[in-house]
Length: 179
Image 1 (spheres, rainbow, N blue to C red):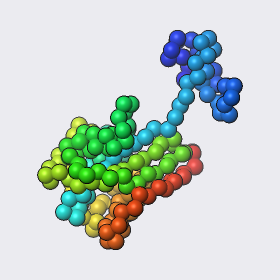
Image 2: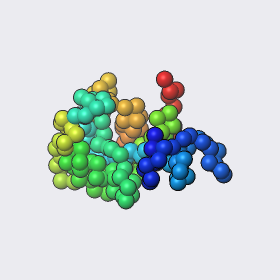
Image 3: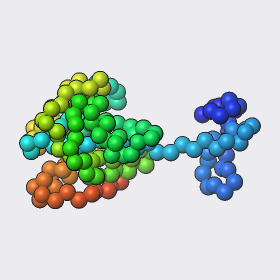
Image 4: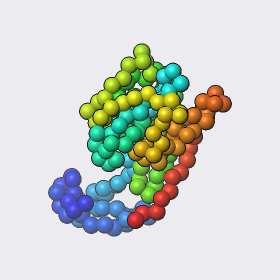
């Protein structure tokens, strides 16, 4: 960051009084510009013992499979975000969404939150950021073509939980060193 979004003056990194981290602070109006983790919300959508996956039409990981998910917007709840992203990515409506998992990725300042729900009316398609969407049974999942580690972990948990017919809320940290 080079300029203040409030007044346009230059900013510098400093530790503001009463804080313990470097922040961008405006040299003129003294506005502190906090940079916080991004929340990615999505759904594990199930239908006839299968899950809905989308093949990404955008980078990063274009051409790889993912659960329908994306960045949370201001002014919405996490659940609203997950349901919205599922519609945008897969043209799918989710019934009875329930919190299912949260993955903390501190190395890239992201938090993934997935809900679990059923595919309403069995209908889905491909949104603007999706090349195709498809329902997969566990044995048909393209495990080597999944876009992100969070997707792999969420699906492994889901199929394990399905066998036990018990779906606890899972919270997990995924740490990779910065390169």
